[in-house]
Image: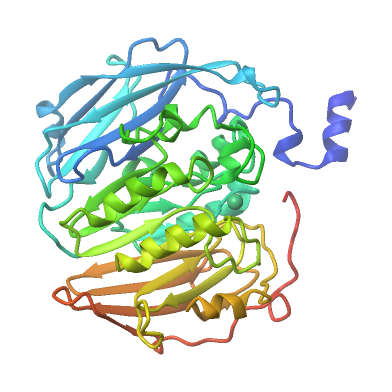
Length: 453
Ligand SMILES: [Fe+2]
């Protein structure tokens, strides 16, 4: 058997996807829809956004939606919506082999609350996806669960897939999945996005997603200064709300979701942060939420010690979080696990905000406690750390009780706390002794496998 120069090169390089020049079949856009992703865009009780990809051969695309029934004829009641189509030239970035693809988006509106729907996307003729089912939210506060993930980022298909799939196995009825930034390593790299979509598979289409923008969804300077370019794929592939009061560069990266009594506020900690502060405050002040959850990528209390924010901005956002009694702050970026609490202003022994940083992909950083003392002076009380683990966090809200859990990718429970909240006074208690295993460290866990990171 003769080996071509390419084959020899690939044998030397191993199977790392980053080095392959030939596209895998699941990377190649075709007439059939793929990368189907469901999002909140508008009221979760009455609307949903969807986006998907095809080759440029599909110039006009459609989605259909109908209430889901047990009978196979549910589709007779389907209504059809024409998609808006974006042309994305992937080839404008050197690292991409594929050239131009189409992304299509539809916004489903006028849906009935608390109703199971089935939808499909396609060309309106022969090239349809399967019918995919999701339930609209109730209009009033009601129990639900969701799953929060830290950075996926590296070796995504090979080793992140098991985290997201175990998460689904653990909480199959999750109302949504929140990805707290750095979904991929290289913002424009279509191979990495292909991996992310293949790893999540039908879950991305079935369980509504809340994507948060991380620094790796930008190309450019890591620090706050300097020009950064957002992933050319972010806007086409995520059908997200536009906050018109914010600068255009922040559109589809800062948004809120009001879901059955909880408000999830997504910020963009990468760019034009100060311009977000007033908007952030307005979302916190707006009435109608029993629970306030804030998500942005960079941690205010970084477990691996990588302080990102300048002091002024950090203080500003921290003050808003404590002044407005935020219940839960979710973050990523530091590739290590840390859960702690913030107290009420001037009441150091009280509990006010649960603060978590986590990681779901294989890249791991050592825990760094040098800043713990200064964080403690700010009132941050460390509760649980964890090194060398791929985690996911199911969070359940039921009336006045929020249950937070953290699992490892093998399904083992690592951390659990329960918050009880008095909606009249806003006062909360934290029950944190319900789960206490040994703290994970690099020393007491298997050797860290850096392959493909
Ligand atoms: Fe990051």
